[in-house]
Length: 175
Picture 1 (cartoon, rainbow, N blue to C red):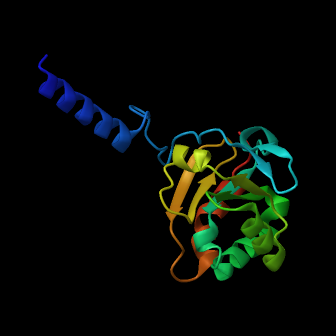
Picture 2: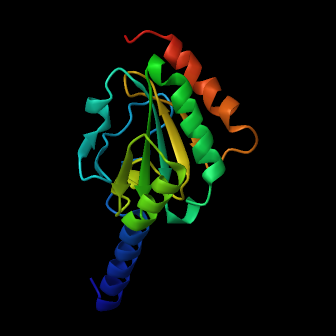
C-alpha cells in the first residue's frame, strides 16, 4: 500500500473509531428489552445492583447530572409518586451521571430525597443506556424489562405522566 493511502486509511479508521467508539454492534436498549445491569455506589459508599437488590419491584431509574439539577419541580413530583406507591412495590433510583458528588449531595439535601442516589461519574452506565443528555428516565417492570423511556423533562403534569406507566405494572403480580 502506498504511504499516502496508508495514512488516509489510518486517518479514516481513527475517525470511525472516535465517532462510534468500541461499541460496534451494541445499541442502547429499547422498550420491551431487558435493562442493562446497573451496579454503582450510592452517596454513602454502598454498592447497589438494581437487578439484584430490587428484584420483583417496579423501578423508576432517573438519570440526571449537574446541568439538570435545577429541575427541583419534577424531582419533587417523582418523590411524591414514590411515597404514594412505595407500599405497592415501587422503587425509585436516581443516577447522578457525569457530575460531581458535591452537587449530588447538595441536591439531595435540598430536596430531602429518601430514595437511593447512585453515582456514575464517568457516565459508564448512562452510555450503556444510550443517555446522551440527562435527564432521562426508564421505567422497569418487576422482571427488569424496560417498559417506558422518558427523554428530557416532563412537559405538563408530572404525576399523571409517570403514573400512566407505573400503575399498570404495579397492578400485575410478580411473575
